[in-house]
Image (spheres, rainbow, N blue to C red):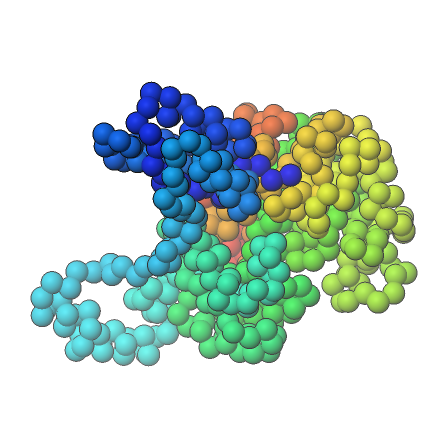
Length: 466
């Protein structure tokens, strides 16, 4: 179901005859093979030829080749070069280090570095808490991965994961002013990852775990939370869960159903699915039924890992067994964080009246949104080219901004719920079936989430000291 989008954007530089029909011929050729033209620039003009840059959104690398071939086949047209605009953006990486202080002369150098810096070091040695006040620690987060579960690409390793972690760090800075840095580890040993992160922790005020495969991610997060005095947050789990809970709160408002009367089916019980279930349980739904590749999760099923045992003990009150399609019958909500194209419109038709469908597998969802809309009252995906995009960017920048501002030492479910409620509240009176979460570019989101998390963190601190 790929459609042309900016993730596959190309610029084709070509020579064409200087005829009156050249522009029309070129744009028609792009359109005939399904490209979406976004720019047409004449970069050189000569008596016998013109040089043109054509920029178009395409659906895939193969589709880009089709467009190039179609252009090159036109009479008198010669394609010189094709540039992938996504790769151009990544040339040299997406991050840099920029000093916050001027180093104009010897006096500046003496204060920023030796000998003046020695006094700052001594102050921190005498009072370690001053590291938050006198170093980058106060505003810095480590984005830690082992490259074992990167996007939908799987176990591609730390080097291949680096572009994603760079992007994550850029989003932290853009949306919340947080200085984040990629930490891509060349090990997938649980004990080794924990030891490395512990050793790195003095530099950071928070740890964002990213793209670490389940079930190891659960143990890594739990043990780091026990051992560190800074918040540890696995975004694939909790960032997703926060935005799903926010979106569901608003979707239920659209259809007029209280969550306490809803049966929710969650497809996929890995990192994201498990965290969604845990956070949704705080909202007291009528029931949650979890489904994985082996069918409905229930207490009598054999061969389950500790995470699945926990899920079985806390969901599926009626002890349902069977397949995903069995679980859907009569349910109010479907939340998919699993695999593409596992549902059709006929399965949504078996759900309760005015069903809600969150098909979040990326890039291809569990059901084509257009098929889901035949019977669902509200449909959301993880894609940017459909309404109601469930995107972690709505959560993690504001969450960490709030944690850093509160100088928090940990993170808990109360803070996650506070973040979800803040995201849902930003929608306010704009709510409708096609707008249940705000845009990731809504400037109100990150500050609202940050304030909510900061408030919850400070309440927790007061409660723990009283």
